[in-house]
Amino acid sequence: MVDWLSHVLLAWIICQILSVKFKFFGGRNTAIVMIGALIPDIIKVGLLFRWMDIDIWDFIVPLHTPVGAVISAAVIALFFEEQMNAFKLLVFGMATHFLFDLPLAHVSGGMLMLFPFHWGRYQVYLIPTDDCIVPILASVVAIGIYIVKSRVRAKNWADS
Amino acid sequence: MPIRINFIRVFIGLILVALLLCLCTYHYTNFEEHLEYPATKMIQQDPESYDGLTIAKGGTVTEVGESSFVIMSMDRDIRFDFVIDTKEEVYPGDVVEVLGIFRSPNRILPDKMIVTPAQSQTMVYVRSLIGLLILVLAFFRSWKFDCKQMAFIPRRNQTNK
Image (tube, rainbow over all chains, first blue to last red; front, side, top):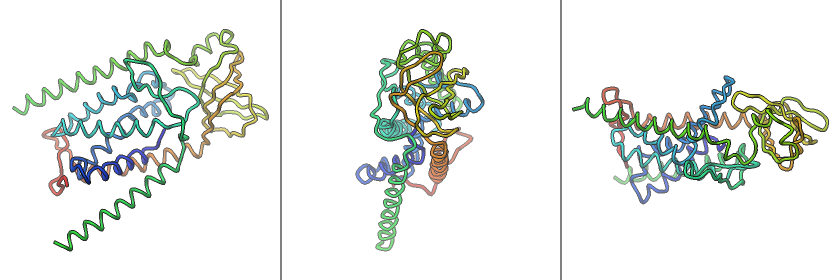
């Protein structure tokens, strides 16, 4: 799996870039996209069960499919005031999750991207699951953006 | 009026959860027909019939020998030990994914293998924990939970700019 640090930071970076043009992705909405970026990994609750010697993996696999994750996002969106906006942001975050999980290397198989309509498994097999370059790069870029944003904000505040 | 809104939310929520459960049940009852390679449970029940076939398995290294090592694979509460015939250097606790030819009763001659060292696996969990912490901090900096509305609402000092 791509670790959660990478997923969260990559979602944040994408939102910061998009918010330059689309204000919808900026401010407090970024946090909702970051939540969405972890929605498909609700499946990781299976690791807790495995730790208790119970294997529920084959039952909860649909949570890590686009259709399952969209339904999960809809459930979570119900806990927001502006549900439709929250849903859109969660689904966007969820899409970033699949985008960054797609290049993970396994010996076979992949993600059920079209489940329940098709059982084909899709994966690009590029990055090892324990890769540490992605989180390091994401952290460096995120810190860079954060510093630039802070300076711009400080300059704007000084000018006004 | 608020009671009605809550009722609609609960109703929609229940429908969505039911839909999710249907999806999970559909997968659980049908996935064996769509497996690329046989499941551990199928191999354990009749290893002879899978002799010579390509299988893909994953598991944790439990024993290491000179020219082989053992991985423990788990499949729906069934634990099964596979002996992997290779001189690849692994250590107990490492996580291994292997694709290869199955030899009854429990040997695999690997064609492709991915080894994730135990320490590296632990680091993935540590990084994930840091990610979760950042997410919780970032989220609750902008949002708070309102028990009356049973919903997350923006904090007053936060604007969406």
